[in-house]
Structures are given as structure tokens and as C-alpha cells.
Amino acid sequence: MGFIEATKTCFSKYATFSGRAPRAEYWWFWVFLILLALVAGALDYFIFGPQTLDSDNGGPIAIITNLATFLPSLAVTVRRLHDTNKPWYYILMPVAAAIAAFGIGGAIGAGWLIGIIVIAAVLLFLYWMIKASDPGANNWGPNPYDQPFDEEVFS
Image 1 (cartoon, one colour):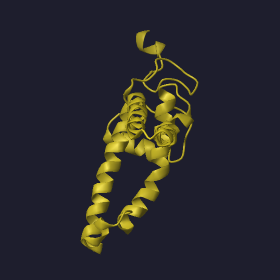
Image 2 (cartoon, rainbow, N blue to C red):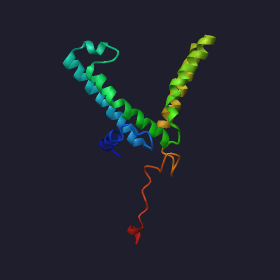
Image 3 (cartoon, rainbow, N blue to C red):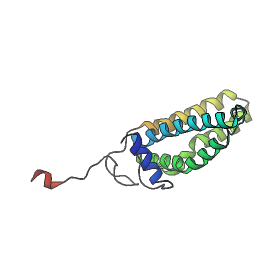
Image 4 (cartoon, rainbow, N blue to C red):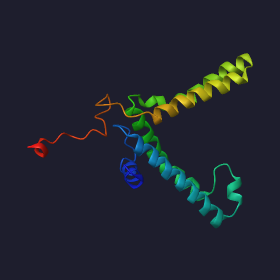
């Protein structure tokens, strides 16, 4: 799966949280999102001026772009988790780790513990996104890379 096919697939599955997304689909879509963010930021800069770069939210074009791509990026991430046989709620793991770390680290005054827990959670999540697809079918469907066997080819 290439850049264009991955982008088309993610937008055609705009809010589809079921099924599986192979690595190529996930990572090519994120490349598209990064390029789109750069273009949106440049357009905001040239149309609305440099003060749009100073705001936390970006300019109006960046805000609209982020809103338009939020659901497909969330959906492809959930489908990518499914591809590695993880449930959808694992997407919350880095956030949950940060909340837990601030609670524990803040209670005992150990800021270093916060950093270690959050970094470990982010690295584990990144590993799942990089990991190869589970071979064969899993709880969320067949492997996207498995091609159906066609007996006519060999007859």
C-alpha cells in the first residue's frame, strides 16, 4: 500500500473503527497528516499573518484541517491496534500513564518517576504501531496482507 492508496483508504473509512489497518496504511496516513499540517500552517501564515504561529491552536485553516482529520486519524489508530490484536482502549494508555504518573509522582514528590512512566507508555504504544501485523485472522478480522488463495491460477 502506497501513500495515495493509504490516504484514500483512511478517508473512505472516515469513522470506521472496526477491522484492521496494516502498518503501511497507518504510517502513510500519518505522513499525509504531517504534510497537510505543514501546508495548513503555511497557508495560515501567508493569509492571516505571522501572529497565527504564536497562538496555541494555530490559524483558522489549521484548526479546520485538524477537526476534519481528527476522526480518520483516530479510526486508523484504533484499526492499527486491532491489527496487532489490541483492543481500542489501548489508545488511552499514554494518557492514562501520564495521569497515573502525575498522581503517584506528585504524591511522593518524584518528578523523575513521572517522566519514566510516561516515556515507557509512549514507547510501548509506538512499538505496537511499528509491530508487524498478527499473522492470520484475529479478533478483528483477517490479516489485511493475506491474499485469498485462487485455485484457478494453478489448474
